[in-house]
Image (tube, rainbow, N blue to C red; front, side, top):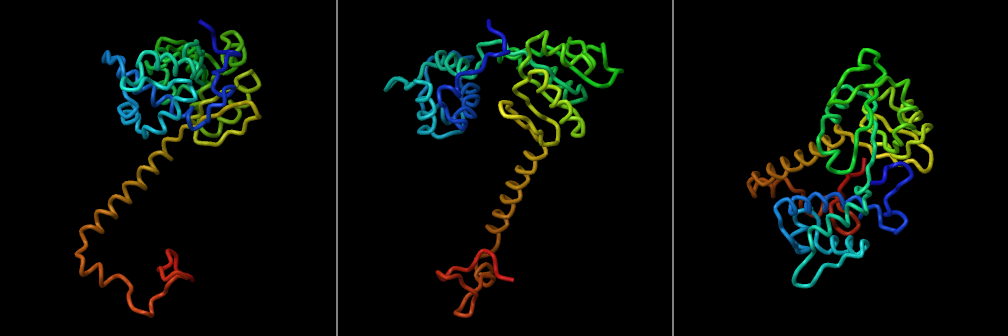
Length: 256
């Protein structure tokens, strides 16, 4: 099996759009669940529903892979699992280093899904000397002074940053200087990287804020449905004197 350094997935060279690349893991997750249930084939409609997309978009995405399914039969589940895994580079061994072994870093180290998806945690690294030599998920924590030698020895091309925000950019700079070309950033800060380095940011607080927005909207919609119709009519502006937009509509934002 090939290792990660200097081996990149074929998606960019084949011109697959980034939006399609972002959906491939969703399809793979749904297909893996079908495979575990020994389902041999799946229709585009069934797979699209399981992945949370529409079937037309799914068929378009798969056309970039050269997979069109069979009319009346659908897609071969096992072949699609292989095809998408290959396109994402998951048929290779990708050594990963995690820098910052606090609660989040330790939790990621203990996550069992990495190995089954082609990722091997090659090293855990932290700046705290008190953590050096400790075992987390069966892996010895190494001091950050060893960062460059660890990356070189293990042929690592993917780094995961789980440090506090103030330390993240410095860690990022050292990772890049050591040859890391892909970074998964959990630190609460935006990283600056040179061209040729890919960064994916995971910000749990932003995701929670988005969920809060949707909860607030649902609550407002529920409240509006509970307002009696006569009261809603009285609350609405009416008559020729109301403020209107150029097409007779009430402007969404009233002028100051």
